[in-house]
Length: 318
Image (cartoon, one colour):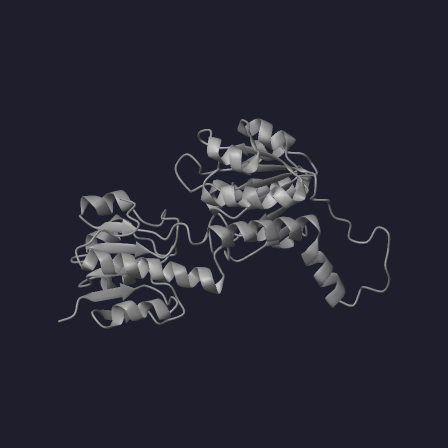
């Protein structure tokens, strides 16, 4: 009997060919993510699991796993998995780091420009047939070149994002849990404390993982420190920002605008955000390029393949 691999949601199919000959693949083919109860039921009898960041793999779900040797998360983040408890149960947890660095950094820039140059407003204005003539004060945005860019989080994505600023002659400030000399050499960035970064930056982009330390690291006090002309970008994880505080900051004019790809209670979004014109909202598409999503699937598959064949996985987080 072939070992069984369960995939909790459809992922790019081509990398799955690596598994089909030697393993039995069972895939949730519905358009809905599995509930916690469904996960507990469906993961029984499986030898390996490929899940997504939308799957809550908590203690109860892990306790329901009776055979699986590996949980391969189809994401770089893994706050959806109690990986420490999984380790206690002898289950390896892996992720897909590195491959989505470019795509996510690119999207952060896309959001920054979309907000600064009011691209979404301009598109809507034009589609609605309101463009009748060129006007000196029509849809005025903000310059990007020559401004001060503040980056919170100097990991792979933050570093990639910073490097892309080189063409815009920007002053770069960064705040990180610890100083990153290599980051400074590559980007000519200056290491500052969080308060200084918030007060002096024209654009603030956040690139940190979600941990107990980073949850709500940006709230109303932080927004009040920022320039009233500043733009805030988040492509990391929603809960690092107090979403209600962000709404308040946008409504009260503590900041000029925001670009978001992630949300505190995703997929639910604070309803007030939909009413605001100074925020651009994207549906968690940071890694959403065909190339990146396929590479993510390939890494998840190779991690499963390695563990089931008694080898070391590419990316073990626990």
